[in-house]
Structures are given as structure tokens and as C-alpha cells.
Length: 372
Image (cartoon, rainbow, N blue to C red; front, side):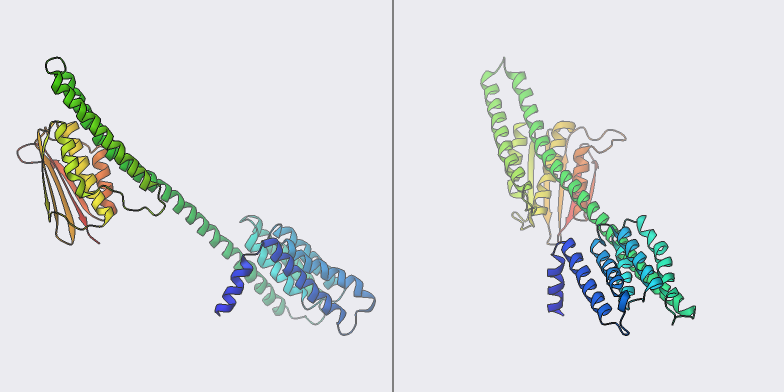
């Protein structure tokens, strides 16, 4: 069985035109041989019988490129052979292959010509067969021919559905990848730009009264920008990888994130339990990005003076909670791109996320990521 499968696999790798030409050549050789060895001999009808055998078998060479024309030519030659000569026993088999090929390779609409062309061909075949006089026999043969056409038609439609599914899968993959890239860039650039804008604003305020402090703030802006460029290079480099490798940074980079946020004027406390949890790369990244986006929102929208980050891992899930003392949500607020990005990250792992105001004012984001 394995050997047969290997042979079929090798044949499938051949060009379709070569396979069809070989099939037609074999069919013609067998049919011509049968004509020369027919009993009783065909005598003067032999040249015409051989020519019709070549037409019937040779039509299979075009069964993929022109399935309707190929089958129509083969059926016409079959009818001529049956009505004016003697029907060859292999002619009907070649016609059956042609009908199956029509259903398989013709378009959905053109394939419907199969039964239309088949009926007069089969009728002529049995009209020229003096031994077939019972109507039940032709009806059974017609049913068999229709089954062959239906089998080819069903296989073709199934292939169309599979091709459509594959195209849709490719489109979905492209969309998912675009969303992933957009999410990574939004989280990275959104946080960095928010911190840098706050720093530049602070430098502008103190520039005239305290130039030394302004220079220190601007140095922090430069450092933040350089670090962001380094991280951007790393993110884009990993995004180019076809295997979707883990995107860094992770929770180990929280101290640097906290330092950046502190330079924007917000105090951040971090508690990770256990201190260095061993997490899958994708979850480690997502937990980091959730903290990053929550702090970005606290700086940009909440105008918070302080925030607290708590990350807890119990071996079954990772819980990330970020709360701040900012203005809190406005009545009837709707989540923006940042919160929607957090929800998308959490949804990938089948987790949960909640966000909103907290007791005493401010804003709170809590996400739970199940571990595999």
C-alpha cells in the first residue's frame, strides 16, 4: 500500500498535460489492438474503426484543457461507431472516463453539459447494439454514467470549497498578522510617545527658570527615545520571523518600564509574585504589554501621580493588575485602542479582563491569563 501511494504521489507530480497524453495513448493503443483482433474480423470496416478508436481514445488528451469539447468529440465518435460500425468493448469505458473528467474539470456551469451530451451518445451506443433490447439495461447503464459524472462533479465542488477555505484562511492569517503588528507597535510607540511628550512639556515649563533641570529632563527624553528605537528594532526583527517566535520584552523588563514612567512624573510601585516567574514567551510578553498599556493610559488620560502594578502567578494562571490614582473614567466611557488591544491579547489565551474606576478614585485594569 505504501509503495502504491508513493507511485501515485510521483505521478501526481508530473505535468497534467503529460498525464493526460499518456492516458490517451494507452487508451488508443488498447482500443486499436482490440479492433485488429476483433472476432469476427472487421474486414473493410477496419480502417474506419481504427480511426474512430483513435478519436475516442485521443479525446482524453484534452479532458482537462477542454473537458466539454473533449467529451462531445468522444461521444460523437462513439455514436458513429455504434450506428454505422460495430461498437468496441473499450469505447464505452473511454467514454465513461471522459464523462467523469467533464464533471471534474469543467466549471460549475459548463459541467452541466455532461448529462445533456451523454444521453444521445449512450442512446446511440445501445441503438447500434442488436443484443440489447431490454429497456432496463440501458436505464441501468444511463444511471451508471450519471453516477460517474456526479462523482466527478462532487469532487470538483469539494475542491472548490477547500480552495475557498484555504484562501479564507490565508486572508485571516494576514489580518491576524497585521493586527499583531499593529498591536505591538501601538503598545510600544504609544507608551514611549506619551512619556516623551510629558517630559518635553515639563522641560518647556522649567526651561527659563531652571535650565539645568530642563537639560536633565531632555537627556531623559533622549535616553527614552534611544531605548524605544532599540526595542522597536527588536520587535520588528522578531515580527519578520516566519515562525512567530516569542516577542520580547517580558516581565523582567518591568524595572526599565517603571523608570521610563517615573521620568514622566508618575511614581510606580511593582510587586511580582513570585519575583521571577517562568512563563511561556507569548504570555510573558502579553503580561508586559498589558502593564505597559495600562501605565500609558494612566499617564496620558488619567494624569495620575502614582500607580501600583501587581503580577501574581500561581502555576495555573497569571493575574495582572494595574491601578492608579488619576482622574478615573468619565461617565459612560468607551474603551479606546489601548484597552481594546489588552482585550485582544487576553482573548488569545482564553482569559478575562476587566477595567473601570476603583474605590477612592482612579482607574484599575485587571487581566487574567490562563497558563497552558
